[in-house]
Image (cartoon, rainbow, N blue to C red; front, side, top):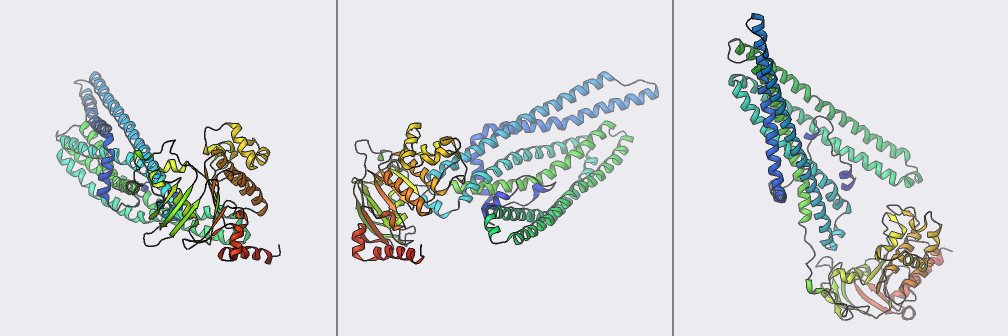
Length: 621
């Protein structure tokens, strides 16, 4: 199971009463990460102060409510006693005023709670929004080597799962921590005001409650953790089976695949029911301890009331406070796990945002229209390695004239694609230089340099959208007529016309509703419409059949007319008409010339070319 799959499969929501207590991934540097988080949250300091003020107000108003309401209970109780004794009755005016005051207090508490919840939701979503923007902008500033050395799934996980986890944890953790602390302190103060002796009796149940919570959480944590891991395993197996169902059926592995899935599902069931059962014990255990506290409070309260120390209304208020005292203590225990999850997610996000970036380009590095280079390219003793001590390109020199087609061939790992990456400044050379019309590409902004090139790659990248939008991607201002003209020129118009909706046909997310050849023709049409001075073709026909290859080759020939073209190809039959063929091996040019010249030379290229056709003849096809 890949980390990407496991992370995507991991559930975010609670899975039972104790789910939020299950251990998440912990931050390596909790304090350092929280400092960075607080610094980032500094931009919301006024919002956070507002949240604090209204959270305190909400809790204070709700805490005062039971004490005020207890006065109504006392008035009613005394009135009933007086009526029985024939000395008076219930003062309903006083009761009415007390009830209205209580209603006003709870209304103010609700309003304060609504304001702080709304503000906290705004802050958490704004935090997610700004962090996603920061990550998206960071991606554009990262060196190309980051994407070669890190999985796409991990990067996507940071911008989706980690940011989402941070937002949820922030929304839950901050408000819950503030309200729980204020509620514990406030309730304790009100209980002491009513009767200190009863408060001590009530506090005896607190350590018992915490002990039970710790025991239950300790036993259920391992099962929740196993549930997370097994859920990821089950989801990964399901994804692998669905994505490769044709291969599974072709090799007759249906029963074996189903058995593996069922075994994992059984393990998930075992861990799931144990986790849910153990966590479900928390409420009855807490209720049992709470009821013991109520009994103790009721007995002691009755004794104090009989002696006239406290009123009946105070007993009723005290019981409510006891109930409200244990709940925030349990919530504070949960907050610690929420903050750990927040720190773990924030650490991954801030680690990504702190990655080394591409060097800032000089604002004066731009080139004017008069000095804009066109198409003459020269490589002068270029040396480059992805690692400083392991050069891939050792000493590469070549001159390509305007409008020429240069083919770069050689065995896998020879450095062919690396040359293109250096030309596009995905990487900078270690030594030597690359110039266009005498201008060193290091003196150009990367965006300006890349606007000189169109690219057609082996992997046909199309996005979910219409055919028209995909062709227009290289030049968004192009008209519909220009889009069709490009499609006609590359031979794509015919198959587009046969599709439902024509140019408005919706391409699926992975382009699976088009054939490989059709997708390649669209990328060639896109490159043609972009109308750049230079062209890069990297194995553009390697994954299609020979008939489709011939059709694509015709489209590429039209595309290359009048443009300086760099063609990387393994099928040497496709580059016989190139003006210059550069034969590379181990990062060096070992031969160069036209197709005929290299065959007459009888060297590495001739051997490579003849071996391809010898293999073809041996098949008998």
